[in-house]
Image 1: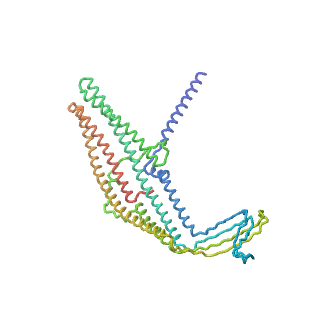
Image 2: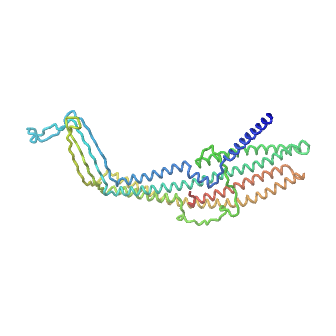
Length: 454
């Protein structure tokens, strides 16, 4: 009876251990995340470090606006001073004032301990320069927003490119592994026939070389997948130790957007490209800076005031001081007359800078036209390659099946089968590249048209 109880307890313990082991493996199996391209782009919008830096730059531009606007806010300051004189201060008076026969008589005055404190106030009333600087800072903020948008569109393109690079490498790995399996089987058959005296040694060597080459290709492909995934993780801003599975597929159907025909007569003015907006705003910014320099010739008017308390005594104790107050309020006007040619030189520099930006705008228009023409040309070529490779894969599959059947029937050579298998694998890989190129062309065109945004 006791033995049965022990056996039952041991059996229960084994079941518990097996359950825990299976549960642990289950957790590990489910620990691997799945991620779509859309989810990857969403992660990049939150975790990409370069984008975070640009977002901070945008916040810095907002603070620059506050800095520029502060010129129109009151400026209030407190100044205090405590002085200990070892010799009394000297003032010079006409001798007649001092009751002496000298033309000028020095007189020592004041206390040895002096205390003073003042609150000053300054408020700008009129300043064309400050007004233009505020306008310039507002444009700088707009430029930073556009630069953020431009970075976002390029980030989406880069994430999409890297995401499909991983898929391309994974699909190529599958094809290479299938090819390796076929060639390993062919090597096994070739060895068997050679040992039976029915095959040639060259067939065995050819199969062996093909297998070894494919093993090297598989190893390289595995390394390529790891590197591409690491690059993708860096773009997304996730930990490199995190693993995930890409669930989108590298495939196309007849209704895919990648096969859409675009009108090549695209108006540059209608594009919502961030780089075009940035350059337009840059021209506006230089115009405001030029206006700000010109405004330095204009007068500036400000309201100012001061309230001061001061005391002088030979006694250092504060409680024994007699305080005297002085206060005033007034209007200050500053009119620039001559600055040694500095303002004129800065004005010339600003005019030249503005002219440079206008030329850059024209050059950018030409570059955008060329970029669009190149992308559309590449897209048309990619579509042609896709259709060609699609037919080539179908033909290669038939060719491999026919040559394999001929070899099985004893009317074909091993070389023909090997060549057919290589042609099949090559055509399948080329087909994957054609799909990848089409998807990249679509993404490039979307960015060029200003359609990639979070």
